[in-house]
Image (cartoon, rainbow, N blue to C red; front, top):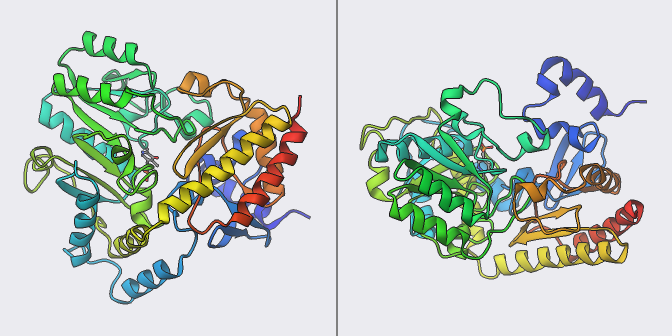
Amino acid sequence: MPTKSQMLFDNARRLMPGGVNSPVRAFRSVGADPIFMASGKGASMTDVDAKSYIDYVLSWGPLILGHAHPEVVEALTRATETGTSFGACTPREVEMAERIVEAYPSIERVRLVNSGTEATLSALRVARAATGRDKILKFEGCYHGHGDSLLVKAGSGVATLGLPDSPGVPQALAQLTITVPFNDLTALEETFRVHRNELAAVIVEPVVGNMGCVVPRLGFLQKLRTLTQEQGTVLIFDEVMTGFRVAYGGAQQLYKIDPDMTTLGKVIGGGLPVGAYGGKARLMDLVAPAGPVYQAGTLSGNPLAVAAGLKTLEILRRPGIYERLNSLTEKLTNGLAAEAARQGVGLTVNRVGSMFTAFLTPDAVTDYASAKKADTSAYGLFFRFLLEMGIYFPPSQYEAAFMSTAHSEGDVAATIQSASLAFAGLRP
Ligand SMILES: *Cc1c(COP(=O)(O)O)cnc(C)c1O
């Protein structure tokens, strides 16, 4: 008897490319068929065959409070009853802007959009307009959404599927995107020397999530700030994943860097589609109608998305939230590392706050090349074993895992115990 998930996937494959609306959901790199979800509550979700999972994907990061947080649901319900969209100004958008500007001192003005992809594309357009330059620099294995200029040596699903750079991106455009290994200060300095005063922007995930979690080396982000400042290049921190995640004020608060522009998404939508880009007033005032750089959106600042996001941020400001979340995540990652060591399995765990990746390699993972040394077929086994045990890890070695405030000590203990059994099965 096929499961309901299998039957749905058979049908989906006929109707949608690869049967999915976003590539990594297809579970291809972990050698499994996708599971269809029916509901979620707190730290867990339940599939259409009534099997439950402790969720460490959390919709790829947005659900920092877990699934269907009662206060978020209430805020959403109330917002729904008063109209789902106006395409006109609403008070809550101003409140959201206020919350973002308060939390991110580098952001003086902000524009809400509908996805992280839109946010990074728009930020790039502003940077190019402000500098009158076309070239941009990004880092290998970083993912900034699926915009043409940014699908060059990209992470996330592109890394998961081992795709070369995407067909359909005009060569003329891709040539303007220069890539450098993350954490490589020498390559960075060399690139700034070769392309002296030619770079419109550097865009970076200050803590990378999209080749798995990779931590910036001491001084790397600072060097980036210095070089961009010297050459009038716009420094864009893509905090779509890290914003309100690694700290309320994002990676820029954690590492004390003042970028020119910042992109946000994920957590600020509380599980609904949202993105935002913002930065120094001199840059953001180039955006229409204040300035000539065009960017617009039918549903931008959507009342439901903003209501869910505002409530999420309100809860995140309560005392002790990040302390508990981070220490529980640390407990989990320490436990995973200890069990792997006990079983003689080479594992490298990278973590910042409540985002982490367990790489199946004994060697340090500091960039895309070292991330690619992970044993992805062992990761597939690890993933499938945990899935069977009711634990949902990212269906790719190259995606970060997350914890939510809804996870409990019991969830962590159960996860470590199951992981230990999984590691036993991987023992060389
Ligand atoms: C998820 C992500 C994006 C893209 O956001 P979408 O909402 O999926 O378009 C961009 N940048 C980073 C760092 C991300 O993690």
